[in-house]
Length: 136
Image (cartoon, rainbow, N blue to C red; front, side):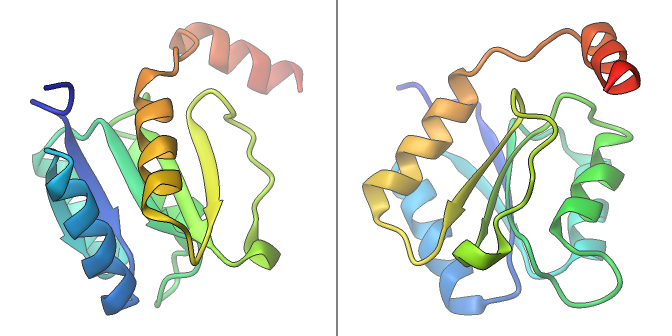
């Protein structure tokens, strides 16, 4: 099955949404590490390589979702991220080849569709990504 070997990091301080997402991902066959805050996410990423992070836009503490992903990408530059939040929280996504957003609440099939699409998405080589960032 496709998810075999795919380890996902789930970061959400909303316990109900975190549990729902974790159940959906586990049912689909993914290995999941679920945490409630940025610091725990950064710690988890320091000891494990993840294929994708599902992360809330708003997190408690000084690091929000995008800042947390930037920190984790210092060690895992090609990490893909699926951001969740309200429509109002929809971010401007600079790394469109690595990032996506799904407003919550969401349907199970829409959520899994975003996860699978991101995992299949080709990522520009790191050198191209840096060149585009400097030019833009």
